[in-house]
Image (cartoon, rainbow, N blue to C red; front, side):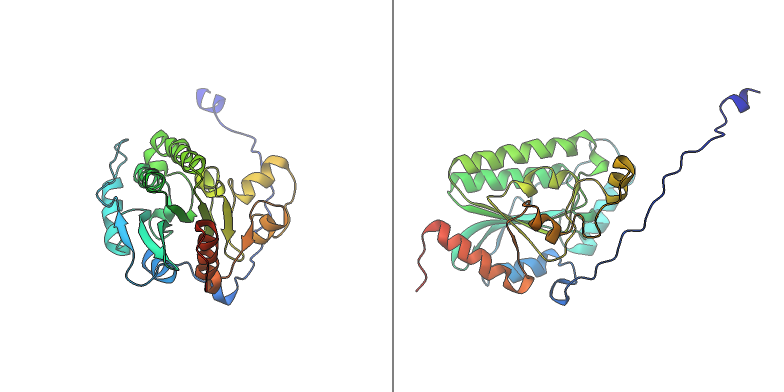
Length: 257
């Protein structure tokens, strides 16, 4: 009898329409790893990494977390979900951060937040522009509230950088979602996106089941965001360095001959 009292006899079902598959443009069909992105954007032999000494901890004693991080470090050749440093882009000294979806889907843990925070602090002190290539599944569940705290911490550093009259360019790559979208990814003075990338906070199915409406096929794609004023520009990967270089030169007052 007691067993039957707690037996679930009725179930709520939510109809789910499969998400449409929209093919990427050939130019931007593959997600880039950190090394490829830096090679594409930075002037030759100018990138210098920073804050690599900040290591991942396990504040919640999440089972298997240290082993997972170690395995990813060996597999990806990067130490965390973001790599930060200083480089030159078109001859302009610039702070740069590259998030890597190959490292736990670029999720934002304490190290990701701390490295970005220190990069913006360094850029503010040295009067440098910042370029961040965002790629993330959102906050890292393995670190709980410590992960969510990074949203406010990095956003505060971005504000301080902005108040100093400095430029922040945010580049949205596939995917940019969750707490990263809800914080620093959308705080850029100029927000650029690659073609046909996924950008959003909650997942499509969650939104459709919450509002009980069918969303447009291109919902949360960069073209949809541009149409509705959430981003400033869509730029093909082959043109992105030249575009960023021109923006940096315009901002710093460098006149091209």
